[in-house]
Length: 476
Image 1 (cartoon, helix red, strand yellow):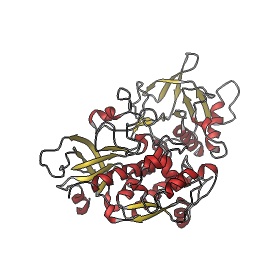
Image 2 (tube, one colour; image 1 turned 60 degrees about the horizontal axis):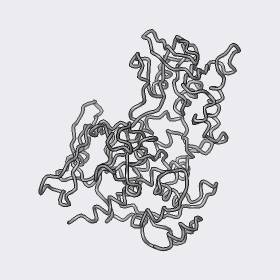
Image 3 (cartoon, one colour; image 1 turned 135 degrees about the horizontal axis):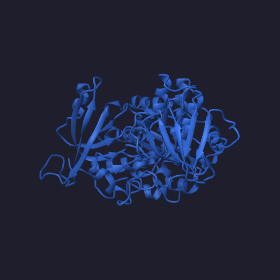
Image 4 (cartoon, one colour; image 1 turned 90 degrees about the horizontal axis):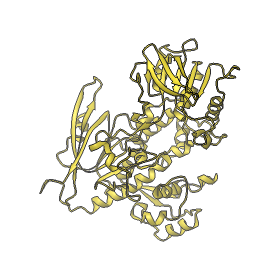
């Protein structure tokens, strides 16, 4: 780590903000805290009449300084977050209706608004996007993956890249997010290779530095990974901490005997590595893919691309309306619907029309054996012992908040239930994204229930507005 980075992580004074996580949520928040400020263009007319009337009431006033509750009232869309809907409506005014109206916002760099902060992440800027197989395409439209003031289509044009069926590849998006941080002059705020191991808080020491307003101080501890794999510890004090870690850090597990065996994996990268070294191929034993979501579908597609035989096991029946494939338009997602069609071709007396693929609906894994065998229970209660070369358990993931007291369980909407991005997110104020349980602690992105890049930016806007107002009101 350079000396400037060491200085950034060893400040004797509390930092106003520490952001944990450097994916799209953390990047967007850093952009806003660096003084980039959204204004409505004087010549812009929003197609939503009620929103246009409200915007016209405060000409020349930054969106950050307006009443987000008032502006977002009455908006409807594909998110539960009112501020996410607001910013999305300002950035993409009529995209859900097939229109292509230009953003009504313009962005100005106002350095007096900047709030000092540091962004900690395990990967380079872009977070988990650097861990996804690069050829995989995004679930959302490529245009919806962009961050403020750098449209993906413009970036693609410069890079001489193109969208695939209106979607971008994961590799392109990882490159885009890393490039965004550089282009917008945010790099000095980012520290990559940073692993947070503990976040603690409590009342500030009487008369302590940076605690004049009586708010709690946080201590963020962890270590930096170096190229030689040495670990350098760090410890920061902060007045505010923002959780922006996403949910892909801790893959969900089956909890069956043998799941820790070396041929059982929980990420798609294991299949890529096995193909690369020749451990699996057209003549190997099949790869067992477990799961009925998009990650499992991606694994099926990747294995089929390399002609690797596949056994695909999942608990639900193929016609279950809750399957994600039934919620995706066929025209936009033909490859996923192809997998769904393959899943319907259940094993039977007649040969499958998809050579090298066998669907195992309503099967449950009982255990794995060291002889590279998987034991499954079929719908009739019988057992099947399958020889495999590799197992991929792709049944979802959970946020890894092990660095928080109680792994963050007390911060959830339902504290007695496991924290889940989709079912039980962190309980936050919808217009500031500050935790309802702990002052000074914020959560943005999937942790707060915003699961698409298109909508995580609203959470960043709400948090930035709150944090800027806090710092502006602090005594000199």
